[in-house]
Amino acid sequence: MKIYFSCSIRGVRHDPETPQLLIDYLKGHGEVLTEHIGSISEELEAGISEVEIFKRDVAWLEETDVVIAEVTGPSLGVGYEIGIAETFEKPILCLYEETGKKISAMILGNEGLILRGYRELSEAYVYIDEFLNSYKPS
Amino acid sequence: MKIYFSCSIRGVRHDPETPQLLIDYLKGHGEVLTEHIGSISEELEAGISEVEIFKRDVAWLEETDVVIAEVTGPSLGVGYEIGIAETFEKPILCLYEETGKKISAMILGNEGLILRGYRELSEAYVYIDEFLNSYKPS
Image 1 (cartoon, helix red, strand yellow):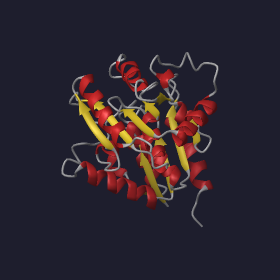
Image 2 (spheres, helix red, strand yellow):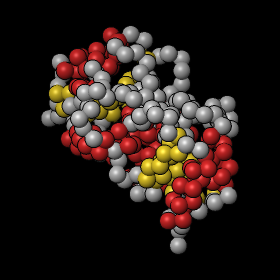
Image 3 (tube, helix red, strand yellow):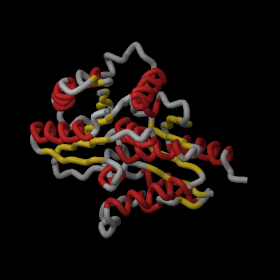
């Protein structure tokens, strides 16, 4: 199964460890197209132009089986990717840490998304399992 | 002309004055569907559910002639709205204050957007004029 994992890079990272831990977990379940974003980073992508990053990511969104987005922190890129993934009719799981801070109504109020709040990463892993089990490509 | 103005509400606002000033300027050029977001706020929308906000904003994005987004601060909602506006094939102007902080490659590398950096709001107003003049509905 191909998994597009989306999280804040240039926006606000709520917890810098979380993306890599989620990616490590997802790698046990399929091919994580965006696995480089866990270790961040602008540095790793220094040799690639903005247009190349954009085109690569949109191609991956078209190719992926499912999208899993970490939406705890505000991010233009994550919001954009969720919008585009919807037009490609991809199943989308949005995970957020329950910090008490409200996230965008464009996410919270969007009934097309599967939205799950977690307190511990172990809860997030359970939501990931449930999600991936329902969308296994046949 | 109908104008959908998008800016960070629950994300990070770079300068709290800017949205209202931009909205005031835009109101001289057309109907600003989202004019309430300048004065912020979650409070003003307290009586409306997340789902109602989402549906209203998506309906406005479908109805609008053009979209103008302030993208200086990270925001899930603004990113999502830009993605959806693209699928509705709306002309989109993204304005950002030149702070030296890099914004998302999903915006900077997206050749479907008109992207303009400004140092002073007076520059932003010039970009708005140019944009609206090119997309006047006939």
